Structures are given as C-alpha cells and as structure tokens.
Image (cartoon, rainbow, N blue to C red; front, side):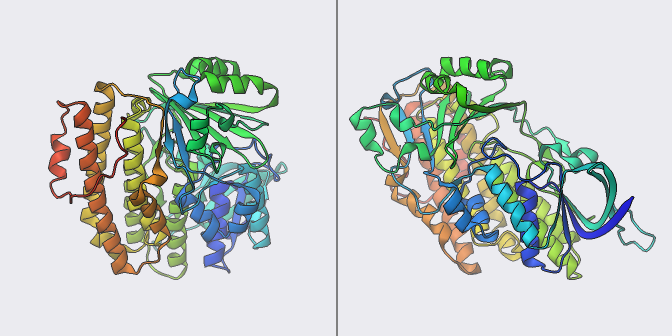
Length: 538
C-alpha cells in the first residue's frame, strides 16, 4: 500500500474544500495540501449542485479572498438581489405585492453555476501546486493519537484511487465532504436544531422569465431595468417558498422549500408531484415548468436538510467546513457565507499553529463565535415559515433580517474582524443584546402573522427607495480602523433598536392587543428616528 504524508488533508473537492485549499495556499505558500475528491473533474455544469445564489459575504469571499472577481464577472450572472411575490394560488403576478429593489444596490452578489465554478477552482488548485486526487473513495479515518510526550500524532486517511489502496497522513484534517459528512458522522457530531424543513429542486435547460408573466404596463414600469429574472425570485405562501435562480448557460434552477408540518415531502418528492403541487400553489410557474418539461435536466429531494453540529473547530487539529459542518437553510442563501467564515477561522488556526503559536484558546473562541453566528442566523428560519404568506409581516421581517445581517455579521466579515479578539471582546455586550432582540423580533413577527389578516395590494415595496437601507448596503465597502469599526457596530446597534421598535409599533397598529412586553423592555434605549419601514398600503 502506498503511504504518503502531507501537512493538510482536505476531504472533499467541492466549493468549501477547494476554496479552503486556495486560501491556505495564499497564506502559507510552502504548506503541503492534499484534496481528496470522490468525483472526477470536470463535473457536469448547470445540473451539478444546489447552492447557486450568493449574497454579500460569500460573493466578497469568492471575488476578493479567493481572487475570482474576473471569473465571476465573465462566467456567471450578477444577481439583481432578492425578490418576493405573494402569489400563492394566483396567476395575476401584477396584482399582488412585490418586495425587491428597482435597481442594483452597491454591494454585488452572483448567480453561480456550481459545476462551472468548481471546475474552475479545480484547475486553479492544481496550478497553485496543491495536490488534487479525484476519484478518491475514503475507506477509513484514524484520528491523530495522543503521544506519550503529550504531542498529537498524525491523522491517517485510507482511501482508494482507481481501485488501488492508498494511505495518507497529515497534521491537519479538514472535512469538506458535504452531506457525506465523513468526520461529522464518524465522531457523531450532528444535532437536531429544531428546524424541520424539506426541499426539492430541479433544473430546466431554458430560461424562466418572470418579466413575461404579465404585459400590464404599470407592473412593467415598476421595475423596468434591470430585468426581474436576474433576481433570486421567491414565490411565497404560507409555510413555503419557491426559488427561481437563473444560470449563466441559459438554464434555470427551480426549488420548493417547505415546512415539513405544513407541506409534507410526499406531496412533491417527484417531478410530477412537484408539478402538481405548483399547479395548486403557484399556477403561473406551473404553466412555465409544464411547457418546458422536455428540457428537464435533473430532480432531487432532501428531507430535513437543516442540522446543527456539536464541534466545528477542534484543538486536536481537525475542523469541518461547508455542509460537512452545520447547515441552516437556503432562504437568504447563507451557505457560501458560512463557508467563508469557517474557512477564515480554519486558515487562521493553521497559520498560527504552523508558526508555533498555541491554538487551544483561539480554537475554543472561534468555535463559540461560529456557533453564535449559526444560532443567530437559525433564529431567522426556525418556526418562521408560517410567516411567508403574510404580505405585511414578511416584508418587515426581510427588512429586519437584512439589517441584522448587513449591520452585524457582514460588518465583522467585510472589515476582516472575525479573528480580532480585542474588537469582539469590546463589542460582547452589544452582540449578546442584539442576539436577544433578534429572537424577540422573530417571535413578534410570528404572532403578527398568526393572528392578523394581511392585505396584498398591487405594489412594489422598493428596497432601493429606502435611503438608509441602500446606504447600509454601501457601507460594506468601507475600510475602517478598529475604533471606527467598533463605533460602526454601536451605531448599527442603535439602528436595529429603532427598527425593532417601529416593527413593534406597526404590528400593534394591525393587532392592538398584540403582546410584545419583553421586546418593548429590550428597546427602552432605542433612539428616535424617522420612519424606517415601507409606507402602509393606501
């Protein structure tokens, strides 16, 4: 049997593993890195993997940390933000509430063809001197033993390549194997996070242009240029949302994501069942899909896709990234964001360990930070799907969720402060307070949507027309020193307090007996501001 050694083994050559390898190579040019990937390159484009939409953190990570700016601009589509249509059971898209921007905001996102991107990344890692072994099937993993002198030994991975047994030993072992979760399963790390939702998705080798769904001139004029089909379009209803994501090669990705208690998977777990389900809930889309069924490229279903993970970064020189670690939800497209965060922490730990610095304290702190980011983001999803059909509560939720994301986590990332222990320690009280407020806002939104009827008038709730919202997005591109960064987070803390107070007031206008005493107490220091919300329907 062939036995080799390397500094780092990355299990999995998908988006998470390949980007980690490139990030490590940029920081440590002499580090030996080996990526083991089960599939062979090139992988199939368009119908390869789900996870095609990136938001601000993930897009910046790919463009500026991994160095893919030119590739993204040349080979993928610039995303026209998120867009929501409250079209449950309706064909008249022009007669319902639409939530989205009338023009691009400052900080870009992209619609990603995952197969095209991962083939490009695979070429890059090989040109960077990283060993990529494709067609590798992992058979066993032996974790590094504790030696008699207290030091850790080597991790050992046994695998087959072209049916030949091989063994590879390393100081560091990173699981980026996606849902296979080789280390997650071996170490029994997966936990139930209480968010039980299912998803089905498929791709059609044709373009679905929501812009063509109505010839109404008023509707067309609300968002004339750029065109709506470039958005990640969400067709929403009680307990579910449907995504429409265009791919650069001309294909379109379609997915149904639903609360398992409200829309069971058995109702949509084949293409024909999914088409029938769309016929009941999104009939205009069902017509487009039925007309294009001859171009069907693939179909997949996934039950209870969301899960937690007890440990992500270990002091024993192993870590998880991507879907090998905890997974949230495709709503708001956080997958690449959390790859960026995990890879940044893993890279920092390996860089410090290679320099001879003890990493136990940092590994423990990074674990705490990452799990806190995960828990705060999970609160945006858990028990929230029942809000999705409410054309007043959901727009308020989207404004809050974006503000929380851009105002806190995205600022930490864009200002490269994820590993700045001093700044994070200084902001500890504000971050904990905002986590509590976020949880109470989500509970308020549920109560509002459960108990108050919603209007669904024909209008565009234009995010680009809210100056404060567009400016918050723009600030992601600022370069701040530590003091200015700390002040930015404190200013955003005040903004979020004011926004939460106004959401509470708006909810009580439609439901006077709505409780919110705990939230109200948390908002006692909210600074007065001019209205931050969309105007109410006339």
